[in-house]
Amino acid sequence: MSRSVIVLGQHRSGTSAIAGILHHLGIPMGTPGNIESATHYVDGWPAFPSNPYGQFEDNDFVKIFNDGHGAWECPVWWTYSEETGQAAKDLVRKREYDHELWGLKTPQLCYTLMYLLDYLKDPVVIAIRRGFDDMVASLAKRSDYPIPVAQHIQSLYYSLYRGTKVKVKGRGVPLLELEFEAVLEFPYIATGKIMDFINIPLSMTLLDKAADSIQRAH
Image (cartoon, rainbow, N blue to C red):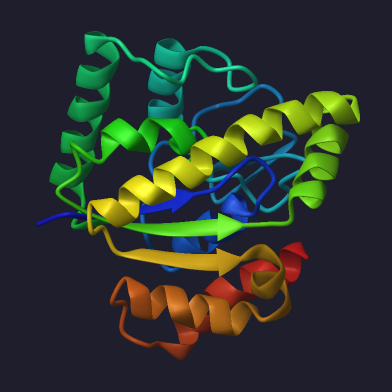
């Protein structure tokens, strides 16, 4: 049975850091895509000044979510069409057919995981959280938004993030919760927890490689 590792978190909460750890542990994170605004690429993945060591978002899933829910800044999160659901289900099946273990990261999962869980055979979820004011400031800086606009967006995602975690727990899906600040301060401990959580045998080579991706980025 194919296992999926889902990274759940708001914009600017540290999802790229966690996805980077998974990538450096050898877990396929999907289709990188070719994004015009990328300034460079890391292992084939688009990177930006705000994510200089890679964003690691599956472009195929992101496109489905964009088409089905609209712009990430103000998504139509409370509903989705039959076509969106089927497209997401089909892509899940493709990922599960291609990989025994695979990962998925996009902040859109704060609202799309609520139905994506129905399609995943063996999901586990890594939830990353960060101080609200820090996420607001980071989003405002990255997107050049006024602070009130960034606060509005993050408030919406905060409610969706919390609601999705409740559903994950209610479904009995294994959940690992991490603090962004602790990941930055103790990358080896965080990486070790992730390896143990998804049952990757301890390897100092893998541990060093994945933890170093955090140290280099921060």
